[in-house]
Amino acid sequence: RYGNPSNEIPVESKILLKKQVTKIEQRGGEVHVETADGSTYLADHVIVTLPLGVLKDRAAQIFNPPLPERKTTAIETLGYGCGTKVFMLFPEKWWTIDNTMITPLFSAKELSDYRANSEYGHWSANTTAFLPVLNHGSMLCAWFSGTSAEYVETLPEAEVINGLMELLDKLVGKTFKISRPESILRSNWCSDPLIRGTVSYRSVASDSLNISNTDLQQPILDSTDKPVILFAGEATDPHYHGSVQAAISAGRREAQNIIDYLKKDVHSLHQEL
Image (cartoon, rainbow, N blue to C red):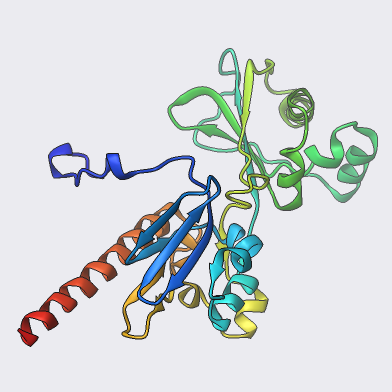
């Protein structure tokens, strides 16, 4: 999409929502895509943008024939982290610091005591930071990562609020008069079966095998070298993986690869004629 609607290709009517893909099957130079509701779609080219977490979980069931060994190894060995955000909307802004963060910083003993003596300390002590939210003056965002992020997604909302309020009081309660949030909103990227994580990264396992995001990027070709199944998404970018920019540029990259192939194909046809 473009900012100027007059420059957009009219694709809105072609976008299908609530169509969970269950099978991507290459049949010669064509690709058959099946969805959970029983629909089947036929395509000359398919760009796969599934998150790496979904590929790790279901690639073996989705693709037929199986993906090449090196691409499978890339899926298995590239890391895919988990992060959770908890947005806290307060009645008013009670902090005076801007463009900075509130970061828990405990000594080993303080951390041990907090986890042992608090009902919530076993998870709230793992909060990475509280950050002001841009353009939302009375909102803070609490960050979690790793197994703590997964755990926070499973907790009742009241427990999340109570745990974060207790932690904030412990950190800055002597400096600020902290109000209770009116509401919170949590991400569920870790537990969502259509995402299963947040961002990719190169791991010790992938580096030891000389595997990179470029291996995940490689297209599946038919017998005539036509790219029938192409791969985009942030995890396929060798330089900026883990970013929104990588996801956007990877989609453009694969769309351009199809355009370049079609132009080449048309040029070859004209030469034959």
